Length: 121
Image (tube, rainbow, N blue to C red):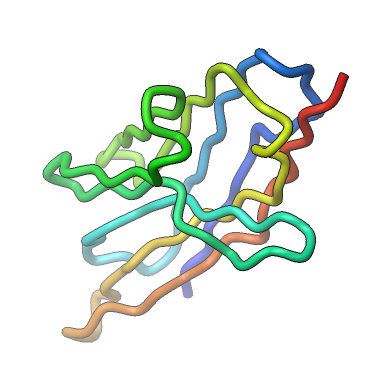
């Protein structure tokens, strides 16, 4: 039993900043990756950023230089610092993680419920 709980989404003006958080809890033996996806109305869900426990990161081209992903491995938590928000960043942001339970050897994929980010003047 694993849960991902996101927080930090809000209504913000263009140029503003937000910090999203996602905490994984439950039956966790190890995590091999955590990341953030987003989905705007009428659009496909897309990868925003991902990170491994060792610190390897991957970003979508559209957010490089503005978004920063980080993690606290001891807390099973991932963060997304968002600066210089643009209207096209408006979307539901979802946390995602590959997690191995204590009783098995395979990794399972989990999704959070999402947090709304709206950029508007």
